[in-house]
Each structure stands twice: as structure tokens, then as C-alpha cells.
Image (cartoon, rainbow, N blue to C red; front, top):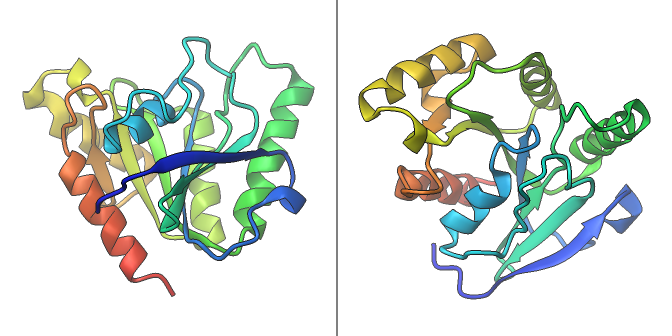
Length: 196
């Protein structure tokens, strides 16, 4: 898919602010610092469309990125950041839950987890929650360039087992090397074409 002019459109805090159009939405979920913004930037061959931060926990709103009026990438706030206050963690959690339950245009949810580490309790809770919504989903294991190529598949298999995800729904990825970039785009394009 050729995206010529991707753009940041809006950051929202509550459902009254969601875009009113019917564009399909591809949603990015994951803990703070898992690389969601880098994932978007690398898919689009852009350096700074999605704002990356060296400090985890910075993204606390839901960010909508418009892909040539074809679809949105929707970046949810990162979860599991320990320095966030309990009240702030609850607010972020509530905004994620409200969005996943109420947005009418969700096409696919992508859960990103760091390939180098076993999924956390928060990752498992998020995976279970995504499953409970009935949305189509895949898992992307980010930072695949940080481990030996010969070990990538075994790490992916382990994460799939922990998250109880079928192996055809989980993909290794590297924002640095663009490993599996074309494959991810194939999955996204297929999802967009089969939207109900």
C-alpha cells in the first residue's frame, strides 16, 4: 500500500472527541517504551511522524494518524509505566478500555511486545482484554534486531505460548532493519480489504 501523505490528526481523551468519519482504524497497543511510534514510523519510512520519546509513559492520550484518508493508525497510551501515579494509571486504563469498547471503526488491533522479554502480567491482561472485545488482532514482537537471527523464531514461539496466541497471528519485527516490514503490510492490507 502506498501512503503518500500520512499525517497526525488529533489526540483525544474521551469518546466525544473520536473522529466522526467511518475510516477503518488499525490500533496499536503495548506497554510504555515497546516501540509503537517507531513501528509506525518505520512502516511509513518516516523519521518522526509518530512522536517517539526516550522517556516511557509520555503518551497519555489516544493519537490518530490519518493515512491518506484510507485508514487510521491509532496509538493507544502505553501501559505499565511504574512511575505513573495510580490515579493516572487508572485514567489511562479507562481511556483504553472505553476506546476499545466504543469505537465503531476498529479494523485490527496490534499488540506490540518486546521480543527480548517474556510478556508481563500487563501484557497478558491486555491480550485477554483484546480477545474479549471480539476485534481481530495480531501480535508484533518488536526489537527483533536486538537478538540473534537464529533465535528469533524460538522467542516468538515462547511469546505465542505465554499469550495463548496462534502462531499465524504473531510476527517478529524490527523498526531498525525493517525486518518483516513487507509481511506486516500484507497483513494490514488483507485486514483492510476484509473489513465487515
